[in-house]
Image (tube, rainbow, N blue to C red):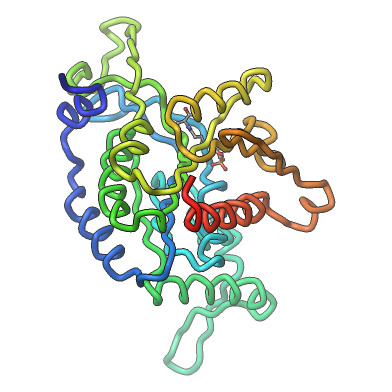
Length: 310
Ligand code: 9Z3
C-alpha cells in the first residue's frame, strides 16, 4: 500500500524549476570537502494555493529571521549551508540591508565621464563586514540558496536536498525552521481558475498534509542529526507537543517556541532532557541574536553525536 507521503509526490507534479534546482544542490554537495559538515536550513512559510492559476492562497507565518540568521552562524562555524527559503522572506546577509535604508547607504559619484555607485563613507563600517562574510562564503562554495513559494515546491526541494545529504551520513545536520502548513488543498481538488464571487462564498475544505518528518528521519537521511521546530501560541501545549513529535519521529531535537516570544526564548527538547535558551534584555539591546546561541549548542551536540551516535 502506498503511504500518504508517497501519494503526495505521486499526485503533485515536480515544479517547473525542479531539475535545475536539483542539479544546483547536487553540484553544491559534490564540491563540499570530505572534512566539512553540512547543514540544510529551511526557512519561511509555505503558501497553500487555492487555485491552480493562483490568485489567492493561505499562508503560514514566518519572516525568515530564524533561518537566515542561523545560516550565517552555521557558516561562521565552518558548515556548508544549503538554505531553502520562501521567496521574499529574509535571506542570509541580505537581511542586514533592507529596502530604502539600503538605497540611503549609497551615493552616485561622477568623475569626468565615469559615473559610479559607492557606499557612503559613514556606512562602510556596517556594509563591509557583512559583504566580506557573504563573498567569502559564496566564493568558497559554502552557501547555496534556493527559494520556494508553495508547500508542494518546498516538499519537492526538501526531498531533493535529503537525497544528496544522505551520502554525508552523520556529517549532515537538518535544521527545519520553515513554517510548514499542516493543511492544504490537494492538487486534484483545486479549481483551475480564479474563484468567482458570482458563485457565492466558497466553502474551502483543507486536508491534512502528510508528515514528511517520518520518511525524512527513517528513510531519506537516517544517519543525519535532525532538528525540527515546533511553533505554538498556547504555552500550555508547547512542551507536550514537542515531546510528542520527538516520540513519534524519533529524531534528535525539537526546538519549541511561542510565536510572540520566539526572538528571546526557545526550549531545546531532546529525548531525555530539555534546556532553555533565554536572551536577557541587555543581550537583546546589545543586538545579540538568539540564533547565535541555538547554533552554538547544536554544533556541540552534532559533534558529540558524530563521535558517539545515539
Ligand atoms: C518555527 O517555529 C520557527 O522558529 C519560526 C521562526 C517560524 C517561529 P521567523 O521566521 O519565525 O524568525 O519569523 N518554525 C515552525 C516549524 C514548523 O512549522 N514545524 C511544523 C510543526 O510544528 C512541522 S516540522 O508541526
